[in-house]
Figure (cartoon, rainbow, N blue to C red):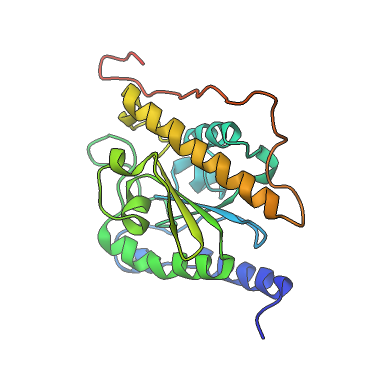
Length: 234
């Protein structure tokens, strides 16, 4: 007999506790200290998989709580998912990796760090069984979609074994990918996929509504906070 939803919720709580106690990357010499970050409920049917927590998340202990998180919330709102029903939030690696030595944002976790953290993500998704997974940025796309250029993935959707995968760019202000109008159009297409997937889940839902009330307008304008270019202009 399978686990009840209550059993699964308790199991997820225990898994989160084990993740937060993990020090594998410290023992391997990649981090000075570990503070894994993860958040969400067993009732979440959408999961967001990012790259790694940032410096703000190191302080708050909550995923996507810095500027990237604010931008992500704007994207989700435009896809019809409100602040009160944020999806499950996790990442390819669970600890802040530190700043990039080149000064261009946060350091990209190494393949070894990704491998050390992979079992945690595997266990999360196996327990959660999300119907939709949003892949934020290159590392998440590489893992679940394949190693392709960002513009080849964003704007598309893929369904595998009953799970809908939707690639999106990372909302980091350090990324200049969204400076290109063609890339912003791909983001618009990607968020349209998110909206359709969320509506489909709503139609199937027997419990609480996870999306904001439907607005009267047929489409919402996409507002993207673009990073500064090299000369300081947006």
